[in-house]
Image (spheres, rainbow, N blue to C red):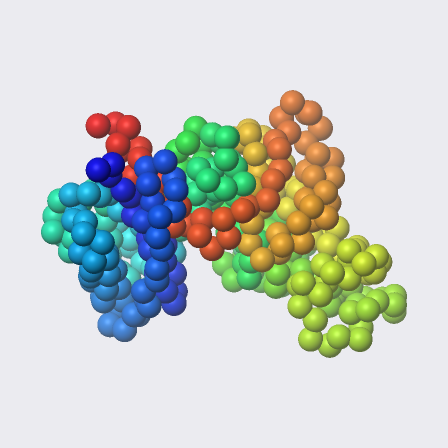
Length: 319
Ligand SMILES: [Zn+2]
């Protein structure tokens, strides 16, 4: 029987687990709750038990696996160690070693930061399919990022590679970002940032806007209003995506990716949003040959699971 790979995307509330073929076909998926009690010490045992139960129930064993990849919501050091993971309560945990032990010691396990594995997933089976070098910007509550060059995740020396949301794009921002810096990309290109910028625009002028009639408007409301031709909303979206275009321009000059993939809730605005992003990215990136393609992420919340499974295949190729 052809070996299978398992991809685990450990999130703050659940861990998504997927069984995939080595060709990237998702065969099955399920979730287990992330039990964060006692500094998250039950998380890996719960995942291991769930995997072993699944294998047993499907007439498989650990020998049928090419390996298990895990995406972790925090920085993962090059040796696979996690010094601190606030989202899970972990301190000095080596999830790959630990999960290998819990699975009986014979299974290859590899762990990488979740945003980076999502980028690898999008490259393998998502919006970046067919490309080898890709940058993923995930525009959600915050802005996440992931970097894949030549089919390899770039995690960097401290596991911080691909932290694209905290590239500073505005020196003059008075408000502080969650990271304590001022003017990070995340302050504009996230759903939270777009809503805040729309509020600022409303306060700064008396310009009519449909948003004035919705005191608790969401990012989707701003994007919908912009699509519908509301000038204040449209100006806000342009203002925010201009900063994203600037960050993409910086990244392009550093790593020259083939494609940028835009994911997260904000990206549901689709082609409308991509056209605005492209306008600014291309405006900043005057050397035409340096311009990358721009596409939408297609795997949604499954991207991390796909990417985690894909981690295993590098090892298969090395053997
Ligand atoms: Zn920041």
